Amino acid sequence: MSIAACAGLVERGDPERFAAVMAAPAALRGRLFVLYAFNLEVARAPWVTKEAMIAEMRLQWWRDVVAEAKPRAHEVAGPLHALIVEAGLPVEALDLLVGARRWDVYSDAFEDGAHFDRYLQETSGGLMWLAAKACGAPDRVEPAARAFGWASGLANFLRAVPELEARGRIPLVDGRPEAVRDLAVRGLAKIAEARRERRALGPAMLAGWQAEGLLRQVVADPMVVAEGAMALSEFARRGSLAWAALTGRW
Image (cartoon, rainbow, N blue to C red; front, side, top):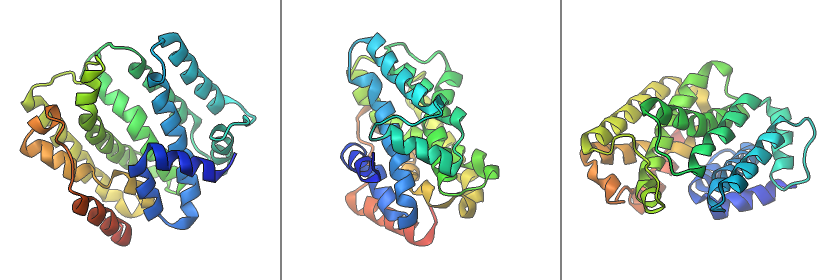
């Protein structure tokens, strides 16, 4: 049960968040690695088996980990328990993050736009707030952290649309180009909202450093989603992360 094990998991399974953590202050990296390793394990759970019952059991295992008073002897669950205690992480947000991943277990479409919003709010929005909290952000900035997390999650979700469709999923409530563009416009508005609290949100927001650039691509041409063409150049990726880490402006 070590931070190094969590860092290794993130480096292999979530290289973009790994890069963001490495751009954060060294004193905060351990906490972020633990949180992102937990998120990675939860996000993977519905996809490692075709048996819905087994996937549900994996997710329930993580819900139990979050709820229990004693740590489990597991390379991620143990450090996560310590982080919950040390940083005062809200257990409800952790539980909702796990519970929302039940959508990934099945092939059903989202019920409506509100269901889609809630999925992003409880997964990416919740994770962004948990990361900010772990880095010492005050409770008053929770709405801003969640807004930025929603936007970042939307960008990542739109990038995943072709893969989700290839796996037999129905990822979008409305896949028309104009509806996809409207989603991206909403995401950009949420980024602008979050920037009002930029100073207080801290380095946890580095994880969403690509969101604005990706969403602007969708606004310019929503077909990049269906074509799987959402991507920043390597120069833009590296440069924008370095700029955000150096200036605190994302």
